[in-house]
Length: 127
Image (cartoon, rainbow, N blue to C red; front, side, top):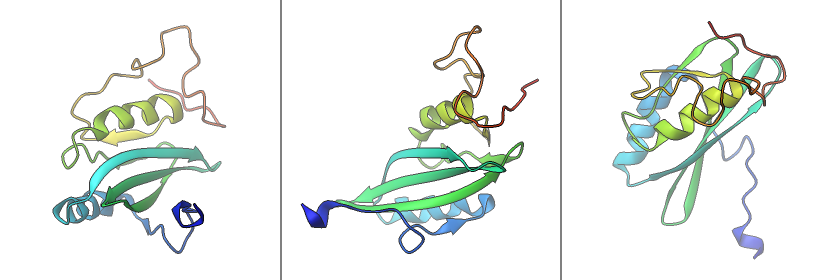
């Protein structure tokens, strides 16, 4: 089981600027990688978005730090299933995805009475 543990760190998780994420995910898709999921965490001034992809049990992670209040391109044009996870990250962390083909407007999980961006340390006000 020791070989099955992967620790995400700077050596195996390249950090990309937001404008490179679509190009990089397209390259990986062309190489046969499938989209697994995305995860995110609040870093204070920014939100860290991790993209997780795999091919033949080889996991690849891509990291993008998104300054709060800025947008990041949606990868749903490359991997359609990313649209749901992007909506979830938008709802819970306030990250805006440019080009999101179906935007649930913060109502994927939460109803009107629930706090918006509940996992974001510093709230993001939506208009």
